Length: 297
Image (cartoon, rainbow, N blue to C red; front, side):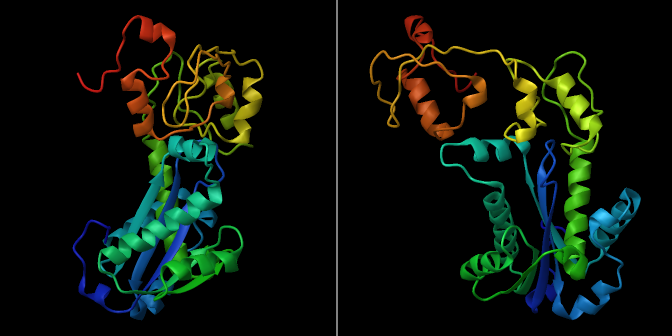
């Protein structure tokens, strides 16, 4: 049962849930959080379905198990796919959000989503990120009616987390296989290996696809330290702009030099668009030519 299907009768009885992720470490592709839930009375049957930590299974077996759980009307599941651009934007913005916080927010979002569907969650098992006890307390404070078990290697300890691990891993693998590269540069290819920083195939792909002005394709988590060595000879881009305060007001004619590698995300998209469309803080090149930003065509 996927998250879009009608709520089954068993969901109104006490239920358990497992949560795990796939793709936390790679420099390429999304990070995926997955959950699996079922009636607590189904727990013994769940143990007989041969779920295991997805990292210990071959791809063909993971795919088979995923199709099995999708067709099992006594099991529900859901995913949260976090785009690589979103990961990097959050980690580089002015008020940075680290990977642990992003992971916690994703897990919390899955719990809230399933509760909002009307599922009676009473126990949730989570593979820990960071300190297990602090994470448990954080979850318990948000959802006091639920018993949380947070543990290292939970995907090898609890079948319901093993199932969630398979959901997350297969979803990420499929996302990578079906990824459409937005960029149209010549000689781009998809032979990027596993996506992990130590993979020779991934390293070769990053080297081949770097651009000294525009950086990497959108598949890449450009905030990862792995990317830094590829830009030792990055082109220094000079921006002539009015210095802008947080409220969008101009503060004189001071010019700044910004390297692309140092640029973060300092304002919300809506705020930036308001400043841009008003003409405040815009480059003199655009102001002199009375160029406006188009929001529709």
